[in-house]
Image (cartoon, rainbow, N blue to C red):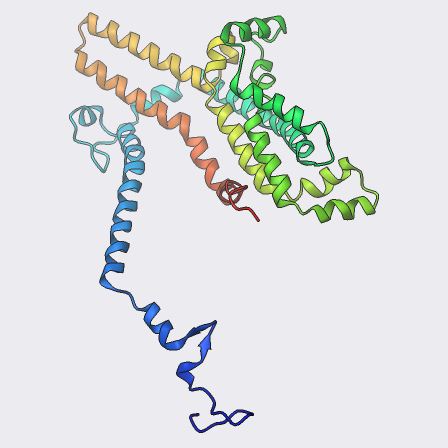
Length: 325
């Protein structure tokens, strides 16, 4: 190789001097070599990540194992990493209550129907706000943003809901919170940055209207953002506690979160009554803790099952607007 000549008479460069991707081979060897300091930094980062992960996961894991452990072992501090003496009494008492199943039915209805209404309202508004030829969009966007910082308060809201005839009806869960300005801004950013304008120009040349472009082109390409804001809306409906507390009186319309609160309050009342009747306070507290841990699992398990199904869409959609250009 060293005696080979290229046209022009100059010798060909040696193999070691040939630049691959603009970096000489000798330099590439030097870049790839890791020093002890590099390993120390990697180990330190790994330890920090492990500590943060443990700080997040361990409390959840402890609640899970405590909910199926012997209440006496939990009260005595014997439960650390594994269950101690299986006991499903807490779950049996919770699931045997018919109010739990009524609350689950209501919450599933409110969550799915509410999310569908939310998406049906938010996505068209976001698409309209993303179109530069829609001239009033700046004024309308200002009015939308104004509602994020200023509101009427609890009493005017209650009077408004009452005047609309939505007290003690399912509509109070679906209509007042049908539109979220924050989620609309996220969807608008997606339509502006992730869907090429050339698609609109091509659709316009083919005679496709705005409605046709929205339903046939924009929506099919918006799976990531639909999953993201859909998950936001669904979690919001699932965790909605305040609406049922203020506007609902009928037991048949109570969502799950309010039902669980009633069970906890009833258990605390029974705890105080049992203590006054002669049962030890320690036994009553053990019973209350078993109910409490079971309630946490019952209320969060559906969301823990739902999130992995939407994780890949959520990770993609959550980065919308983070990178420009």
